[in-house]
Length: 160
Image (spheres, rainbow, N blue to C red):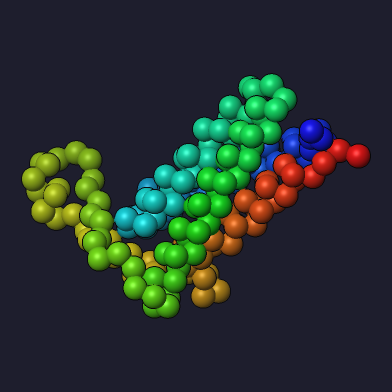
């Protein structure tokens, strides 16, 4: 079995770790600094990125062949985040119907009952922020999609 060359695998491994970490950092920054609370589908995208971080971190500790499969697993999880982001963006743009439930966000501290009763309802079909007509879910689709393809292609390139 031929394996990817060391440089390609190292780059794929770095992308598999840095992209989901950066996107999660951006998501939490926009939530806690920008006040953009996540809806249900936003959480799904975050879960996929967290799932990508586990094999990405383990790929830095694992030996040869296992490292390759961990990088590919992380790439697949990033691809799942991209697909969820694409679906979510389509719901926001009105291209198709999404889920029927909405998420509420409860702030920590104070009276718990009061917090639940006054929690904002976050709709999945509303774009809370966009840049150049692209929502956060749309950017997640684009960035995660490119990163997933890059990770998977780099991890598949054979040594010569």
